[in-house]
Image (cartoon, rainbow, N blue to C red; front, side, top):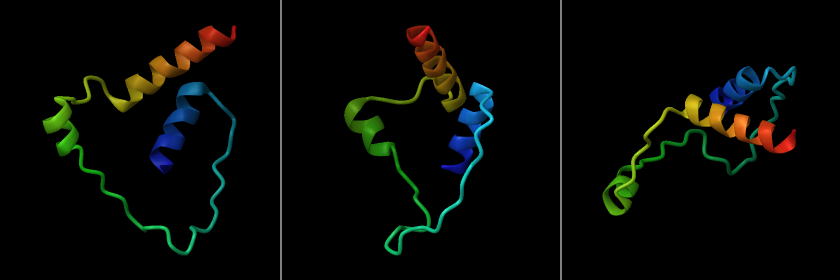
Length: 66
């Protein structure tokens, strides 16, 4: 999540600061999603990088809001 938040701040040129808060007591300390099932069952695989996808999404919303 930290990497994603930093990437969004970077791509948007935001002056937002990341605020660190304690995790809930039952929160898993590490998530490791496996997308193999989606690849197999849905024949779906990322075609672009996360950074490029975020850039396209930000550009879309910039256009919609202007």
